[in-house]
Image 1: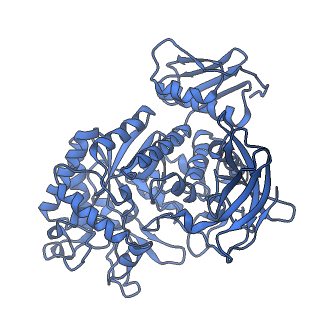
Image 2 (image 1 turned 60 degrees about the vertical axis):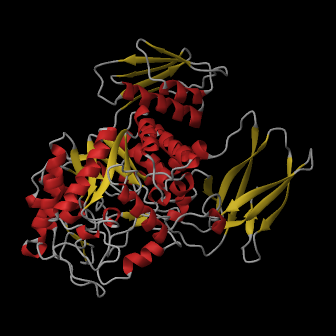
Image 3 (image 1 turned 180 degrees about the vertical axis):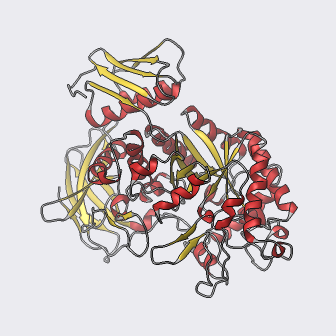
Length: 600
């Protein structure tokens, strides 16, 4: 790779191709803001998503065998120009895993919800992801069963009454329950018209859609108006269906058919994770729980296979899994934990599966040997709920012939700030480096982390424009605020984290500007650790990092000074022509806010 700097005049890129290109190429190329000739050439001897990018004084050339490959080469160019300006380069790249997934809830059905969803998808496209998994649950409009939506609205409103109520409701019974996804759709109903717009937006960016439709477990959305289908009738908020009740399968197949007719997916995720209630009703007691569990997957899976669709399940119940200290989890037999009901082993059900399915492997942290359980059964698996900084033995594990992809999952609201503070943008970009460059592995954290931080800041921090100038502030604070994920009913309200405002004054006009200082968004603790450590030895087969450090990625550029103090550089926008500015003071929201220190 060469690095000679190039200068192209301001203007619009000129796209040249022997065959028509989709309009999306012009949309993304406009980000280059330069009068540069972009040549797109179909070269059939390249792999499906492989591309070759070369940039010289005469312009840029992208070669690929498909439009998707050409699109990814364009993203490579946009990223390089963003970080380094125009320069002579030559790059050839192909993904080492074919499936690269971002899992989201449906956005709130508002104009803002739609716009933020589109911005999130555009960033995933910039990172060359090719699949979006959308959890539908009760948040999608179902015309065949409107009672599902009626029940969902009532259920979500109850669960979202106050932050953390879902955790209270999950843990207040004498039996284990699965997590409650009441943030989906903002607790509202996404009309089919909007849903189709979301799907089309993704497909224009060469992304497949996987609908995630929970069944058997996580089925609270099915049962709010159909309690007769619940396995545990005494549960006031049942979440598991009776696998032998024909009404359950009829209802679920009706919803599947409606979604299939809408978007014609290649795969559907039918979940089956966190199944804690099974084998209780009089009919189910006559059968082994493994037969019930596998039978439900086989029945739904065969129905989908007949229609040319591959089912996906979360795979932890197929694992005889234990934390390093011996505590059973997943599909292992569990004695009564903390007064809860005991659970029989479900992992032998793996040997009873007869349908063609795929696994989303979210126990990659527990023990790396579990990869082989899936491959030994001939199942392709995706490293799901992936924190890419934490995975061990990356290069060997992705060479498993059944390793099929990665999935970055956001289990909170689908909003820009929630994804930032849950570390999702960081994970998307970090994982993209691992997937698109075979030289990188688990051992390269010290190189990949700072590179990811800089690239996210270049991508998300406010930029100069004809309408706006920017001012950069470097600040820090020391508080006792602990990191928390925004999921399971904890929805982000930035006002709860607002420390105050930086106050500036224009030396030209005298106008004052108030720039918000929000903990976890554009400032954080001065003593954060940037190191990656071994996970708790008694617990996981994975690394761990300080999530509070990643929380501010994109909005800030953290750095540590010679005295080991962590500072956070961030930008604010002001109308063009307002400067220069003079710093006046920091105004705190109340007297309890600790000192916010300014470096420059």
